[in-house]
Length: 406
Image (cartoon, rainbow, N blue to C red; front, side):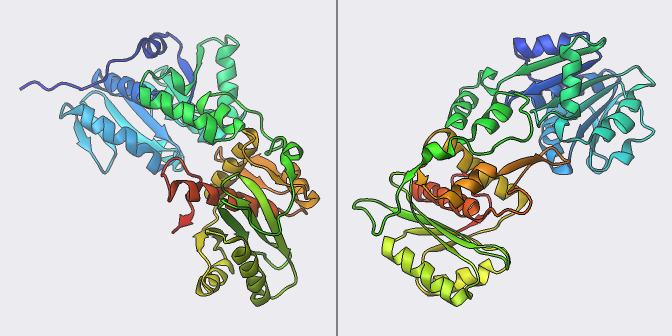
């Protein structure tokens, strides 16, 4: 009984890319454009036609979607080795590797090399390990990624744009995928993420590193502190507990009108007194939800606040959850959705807040050296609590609260 590879029919825009004669193709595409499935079809077809093909992703976890898809599409044509992450067609094969263990590829030779999320692979992995694997067969490479700053992937993309021999570069936004669900997701993203994130992740633009994170801060700083809650308004709060040299900050937001209502900052006060003052403010406004950092001393303090009857939800801050939290708040400023108190401490922290590209292609958000970000974090937590209050829970994939525990 004959067996057949089950490969998807490529769209016209995908076919043009696949049929381009360039040896190195650099694809800067928006999220969900279809770059992984397109390249996966190319990889499997090439392997079945006696080519040695390598698929490389930054981490093991990021290889899973391609591996599951490739095994299903193979349908018994090639021999699958789950331990080696390889589909063997006799003369050709498709092997899956990760960029975080690059030495396993030293000494290998390939006809075709595909790097998924290439912008998150280290520069030296591409130049010192991956490129040499193409030398024996004068092989081809397809670099696919959403942009992540102006790193080596951007430089390779620029080569194609500038007409370098053997290079071709392509770029397209997520909305070019004709799937109506993807188009809808791209529309929703415009409203839910910051301008910077939208341009990079969904429009596939190479956004410069650095620069201000929050736009139009002073324009949005028009609110006055309230002494009591306004009728028919729901109030939520964000709470960032202090380390020894920082400030504990409580931010109360009117979730109905997305307006900051009150702020408390403490330093040099023992936690028992801080909890009493926090409880007094939250009870005064009838706060329906408090999103509070639980790292370090946060968890025992949160537990005490819950014993006092306050509706506290824990939030675990990591590099990833902090980035999600900050980008959600930045989107609030971009879309002029939030109004804040005219408080110079808060304004100063927001205007000076910085972003920095990390070695793995991510973005790290922090206050400048020697400055604080307590009010920023407290406000970001309160802003996220508005989304919890609005939805009644966490909408996975739409909420910044990946560190939330209900």
